[in-house]
Image (cartoon, rainbow over all chains, first blue to last red; front, side):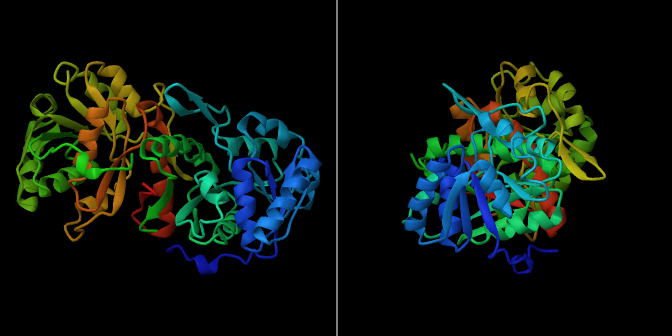
Length: 228
Length: 228
C-alpha cells in the first residue's frame, strides 16, 4: 500500500527521551519535538548539564522539556532517541540495559571518521550502530532514524519547516510506525519505513555523502524519497 | 559554491557505451540517453544479442544506437557505463583493462543479495563495486552513478520526466562533471557530486532500502537531495 501518514499512531502523549541531548543533533531534535508539543526529556551523563540544557530548550520552544542523567531519562521515556557520539555509543547503552527493556529505542548515530579527504564511513562489526544497539539491548525495540537531518537547521528558530524524509529502519513494525509518526510531528518531515535493521548501515554511512555535498555545495542537504 | 548545472561540460557529442546494455538497468539507461540525442553503444558478451537490442532501442527512441561485443564497445566509447550483474562485474572488467585506459567509466552496479527477508547489501572486499572497478582498472577514470534509478521507469515510454537526483561519486573532478552532465541530459534528473569513490559503498547499498520501500509502498522510489 502507498505511504498513508494518516494511519500512523497518535504519539502526542508519549514522553521522548534524548540521550546526548546536549549535543548538536540531540539538542536540535529536542527543540523540534518540544516545539511540536511533545514531552521531551534531555539525558546527559551529567544531570546538571541536562537540566541546564532542558531549561534553555523549554524557554526557546515554549514546550515541556526537563532533564536528567541518562539512566533516569531512559527509565522515564516511552521512546528513547540515542544521539550520542559513536565513540561512546556501546558503553552508554551497555549501562542502560535494564531501563530499556520493552522500550522503543531510536538510534540516530552515524559512525563516521574524518581525515584530510573529508568524511568516511567507519566499519562497525555488527554492521551498523543500530545493530550494535540491538545486540546490546536484546529486550528493547530498536529502530534507527533521523540520521540525515541537519543539526544546524534543526536548531535554527528561523527555520519553520524542514521538507525532507526520515528513513526509519526496524524489524518491529509497531515500533517503526511510532517513530514514523514522531518524525511526522515536525512540519515538513515524513517518516518512511526504509527497511529492516540489517539495512541500517548504509543509511548511517550515507551521512558521509551528505556532509561531502554540504561542503561542496554550501548546503544543509537532506533526502526526499520520490514516488513514495 | 551552489550546484551550478549550467557550468557542466557539453557532453552531447560523446559516445556512451553501456556494458550490460541488454539487462534491465542498462537497457533503460540506453533508451533514455538515446532519446536525449546521445550516441549510444550497447555492449554484451554476444555481439549478435547486442545488435538486436540496439536495433530495437534505435527504433523505440528514434536515436543513434548500435551494438557490439564488450571489448568493441569499450574501445569505441568516450564514456562507458557498467551495468552488468555484480556476479560478473570483476571478470568483465578484467577483460577490458587495455580498452579502458584513459576512459571515463561509470559503475552503476549494486552488490545486493536477496533472501526471504528481502534485499540486503553484500560485503565487497574493496569497499564497493566502484572501488573494485578502480582496482581492476588503474588507468581508467572510474566514477559511480545511476544506482537508484528505477529500471522500470527508465524503460517506460509513457514516462517523460524522472524528477530525481543521480549521486555521482568519484575522485576525478573532470570525469565527475562529465557524468553529472550526462545525467542532466535526461529530463528531470540532476547529477550531483556526492563524494569520493571511497564513499560509494553506502550509495550502492542504499539500493536495498529503495527496493524495500518499493515493495512496502508499491512505488518506484528514487532520491532527491534537498537544499542542493
